[in-house]
Length: 243
Image (tube, rainbow, N blue to C red; front, side, top):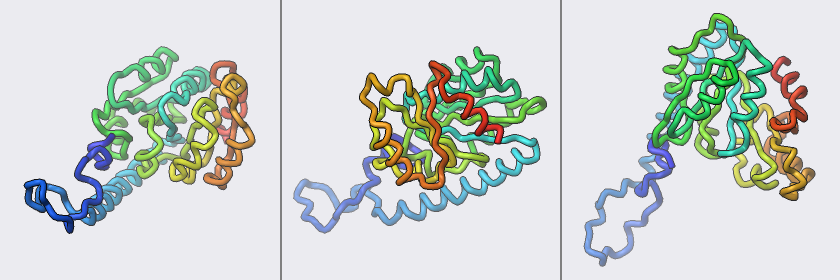
């Protein structure tokens, strides 16, 4: 999935070279020992953390609250931001996707500044990408910046962008056990939003089971339920942002 963190690298997996190589190639056929990926990833995350801290200092100097929105694809991040940006004129967005400016175009149509980061093969935003996008941001009349991360429940969990708060979305269409399957991204959440609640009955969503899974994996996070389509729960979301 990602050229940066290596999760799409066919060579980035355990490989036992103790077996006979009867299939006609040398044991040193290009598979790096798994242990070599550990310092590489550690180094990448340490560099990202330094850059994230620089971003955080920049945000503070500008007086910006920054919210990193994370979720799987199709959970409703862009629809929520469309409603939110219309209600918050002193807010802007940075949007990450592998290709297209579709989401940024939608947010611009809502009347907000929106900067698209096209990541190519990279399945998450990192602090360096965000820092470059900030060069295009007019902060003169801004109080709030939303970062809509690439739709993915795995890699983005590891990358601090310098945000003030981390928001994870779970739509009712995804299944109640997503937090149990992908606990890391929920564990670091400040807020978990259960989205698309208008579809809960249609998809047979088990609310109590989902809330129990969220509480188990994200014990420190606040939980809000909303629908960007009907507007239900949006006042609670706006109040949380202001608080």
